[in-house]
Amino acid sequence: METMSIDGFFILLEKYLNDFQNKPYNSDYEGKIYVGINETFSGFADEKERKYFVNYLCMIVSLDLKIYEVKKEQYSNLKKIFNAPKFEYGLSNIYYYPGAIFSRFNVGLDTSITENCFNNFFKFFSDKIEKHDLEIDFNSILNLIVQDKDINTGNWGNDFCHCILKRKL
Image (cartoon, rainbow, N blue to C red; front, side):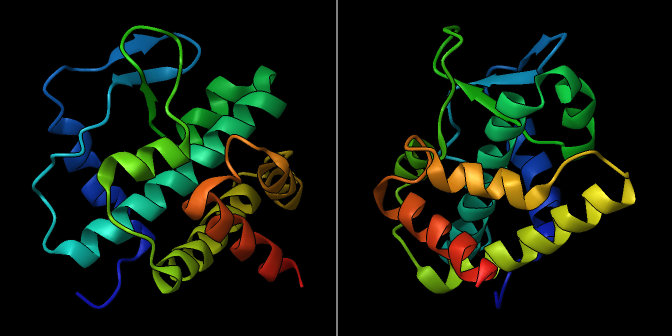
């Protein structure tokens, strides 16, 4: 596998989510919430595809967490547009952050994959925000991600935030 497009990610994400042993529960406000992380999913073509998938997943979870924080009043509508899953530790109302997801998959950091994913992620969500005429400043959301210690720490968080900052230069 050469690279994975973000469209390819969303196709694989659907398979991944359908493979959960326990079906998600539905929250009126936050949509489907999955209990745990399915790190044993075997639907990847190879290890490189798995790395791409985990990077995209962590980026989308980061975006979802920030949008929930800053656009709470619009969140349920935005959730339908962004199609980002939420993962919870048991039935605890405590969600997995990207660094924990990355660690659970144990894929190892690959900066070139993180950068490639970020470029696709940035274009996809910038276009989506513009197409739906959403009242969101995507760059402001990315700035908040960079400042969030729950997202910007650890190897993956540092790499992701470096991609955001590099894009802004």
